[in-house]
Length: 248
Length: 327
Image (cartoon, rainbow over all chains, first blue to last red; front, side):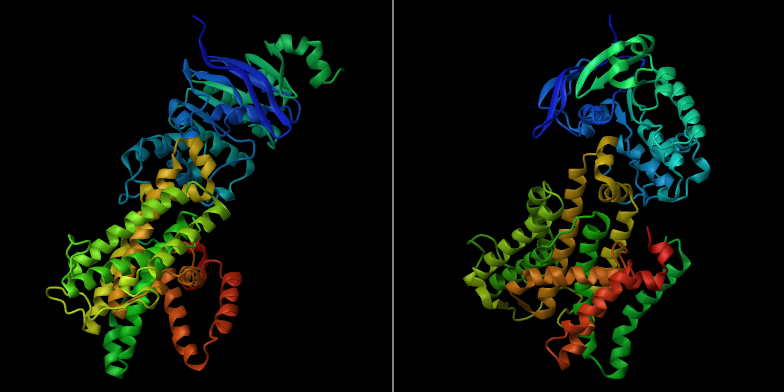
């Protein structure tokens, strides 16, 4: 049995005259790190937004664990186990680190129409919060407002929030962007650790990171899938070199 | 339950002042202040309910007065039919009983909020502002068309609602009646914004897209928030009809929505207690400056600009300390 967690067939998305994705295909194998690379404007984030449900494709089919989710709302996909982080860090800046994490934990439960009990003191939050903060190394910083965190810490928090509820598929949109060398190493370690328990779709510009982490790479150029294969094969592919990697 | 000392002190002093106000007014022989402050308490209630939308839900509604009006009209219409001994549509008897009229007013404004919210919350930003305004104006003109209940001129009630134990037509007792509702509502809202629901609602206003990718169907939360705020405004409307012994379409005119918004901004957006200070200042200025000129807004305007620019968390932020109110 081929263990494809997520399958995308013939995805098309246009914004007016701009065709952001043309016949985009991707199959993500369970338990793998699948990298999606491509030059700026190739339609990587647009593709990701359609996988997370923030954009609905014009045509095409997305299946997750055999279920058609092409038109499913983003909150429903999240509950099926699809989580994502954003290219531009997307956290709740005015809340504390602890509140951010608590919010991501309670988001996973069916409903939160609890009007009386303190949001941080619910049993579910109490049991998971400490571990969740610990796993991304932010326990010491829990009372700090998120906007006062460093750029790297914000990224860590964002990934930590995506991880709550133990997603099956984690989509990371340029997790290394803007990070120093130290941060990149830390994040790579985290991704390798996460790989053991979940499938990861990695959109990344840093080629060293991609070739070090990915099991499979899909190259997207001008909205179309240019190549797909193992890192070695992609590195050797002359079309990819011409279009993207730079012919050296 | 309030963690910051200075904030606690401000709230405590404010509470004591409001409780003692009628006593002091009576001693000084200014009984007029009791009824003036009853009105202030009622506007405070409406402003606090609007703060839940503006300050926590990030939902800029310019139609909040509609629910005040609906609450007022429910009390007025029930009273009218009881007085005329003529059932509404020939089946529903009217009522002068506060314990029937006020809950009815709250329920029916909640129902209006549910319908209006369900439709308006499908839009965002500017469209949301405009659609709430449009609904409020629709209800306003509908009330103007209610010839039976005075149309344009409104309807005088012959007295306030009746109630066992309390005599609501006594201004002193009515003041404490209003104060009870204000305190209860504020306490409820305070617990609400710190609850699990409140955490989600604040998340919606800060970063709705993120929250959806975390698994929250934000629409439902916004709708519940809208209904709670609408019920609060309906309660205020029911009390206002009693206080003035009069209802009119003016209660739901968009200018009242605007005034409530000014009270919230003046007192402090997203501070819960702030809008009470806002409505005290607003109505006192209206009352005092209004004696000298009908263009008292000329003074109010620059004052509001000053507060909004120099005190982002309003007057309450200034009193309670900026750092803590910045949550």
